[in-house]
Amino acid sequence: MSENPATSIRPSGARKRPHVVIVGGGFAGLSAVKALAKADVDITLVDRHTYNTFQPLLYQVATAGLNPGDVTYFLRATRMKQRNVSFRQGEVTKVDPQAKIVSFEDGGALDYDFLILASGATTNYFSTPGAEEYSMAIYTRAQAVKLRDDIFTQLEHAAAAKSGEDLTIVVVGAGPTGVEMAGALAELRNDAMSTVYPELDPRRTHIVMLEMADKVLAPFDKKLQDYAYKAMRERGVEVRLGTAVKAVTPDGVELGNGEFLKAGVVVWATGVTVPKIVGGWGFPQGRGGRIETGEDLRVKGFDNVFATGDVSITPDPLPQLSQPALQEGHHAGKQIERLLQGYDTQPFKYWDKGTMATIGRRAAVADIKVPFLKKDVRLTGSLAWLIWMFIHIYYLLANRNRLATFVNLATKYLSPSRRTNPIVGDIPVFEQRQHPDLPAGDAAATADSAKAGEPVKTA
Image 1 (spheres, rainbow, N blue to C red):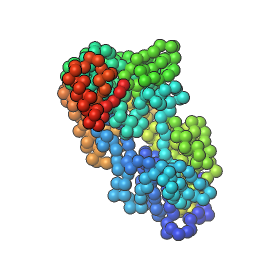
Image 2: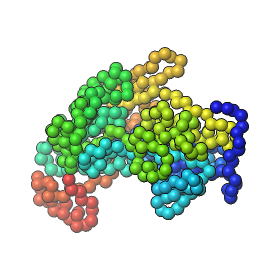
Image 3: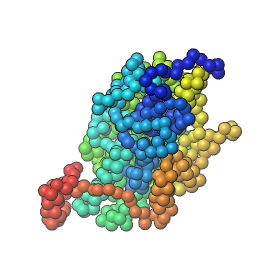
Image 4: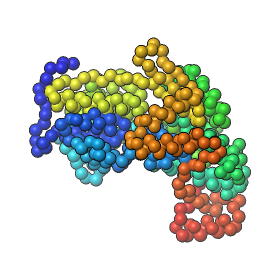
């Protein structure tokens, strides 16, 4: 595109400077904020939560390896380094591109001169009956905390009941999230259970990973897939490939072949989709409901609206991962700056840095793209694991998060395996009627707790 100044589109009105509204405080949204740090604009960052969540490490929260605060960042803290940004908490319900107004569920509204849509995606249950109701996702901080507490509730129940029944945790999906989740659960069982839960036999706690495809980590090279599969099996994860999930029930999973797999916890770790509410914003949508953009990331038909990250789809579709989101958010911010300077936009060019996933202690896979080499660098084992740990700590948003995460992961992985202290929260007490093996005294205590208003959970 031309570098010659185009017709000025600097808006005129009551505001002294153009107003940029960024919807979403995830990877793409914060990257756009940073890209506009020196621009002559006022920025309003919008998100339904007051914090950013580092999603790649949520599985560590769900498996008691990290505190929730280790992977979250207060969005208003962006103003400490960048004074042209403010924050507005709210759920966006409507966008009026003609009037240039964003409306909120609470009745409020914001006008804008430029809009960057970076609202992300949500869990895709693929219309599987019962999946949304009875399985647990790990896409948000709240979901990760609930999953962690449910896992330990199941363990406490089994320890108190002393019924000798097997406990099965099912992980649906063998992508990076599923592999990391299943590997962490297996290590929790293998390393901590015999010490922390002497009442339980670790051999009777089963981790089962279900995958409809015939491979794990489908986007990776076959060498890395084979390594990950072998590492999972060595850790005692039962990997079932070519296995579809027909339905999820309160008691387990019904498989495509008609088999029923009883489970205490079902983790849904496969696929994301754009929230349905995005469809009412009036923008063109493509595959998976993602908002269609041109090569410069402007939404088709709207010169002052950009879409980035998981919510967008470019002419050459990119995976819904953190690196595309970070780079797209930065690009969108820079294009607004160019437009305000009177220049045309530039097409977005994605730099693929590679992908990686960890299976557990000293076991990971990494496919690293090196520009000056003709072949990708593919690593497994301890070296890949150390690179994975360094990169994930580096990309956290604040030094406090980096330090806390480093300390907790170092304590978890570098200390003797059986001395790890799981990070847990409040664990609800089950009702006695679910546990006939409890002694009478324990039953009375449970009933008294219920009368006192303490949390009581049913299976």
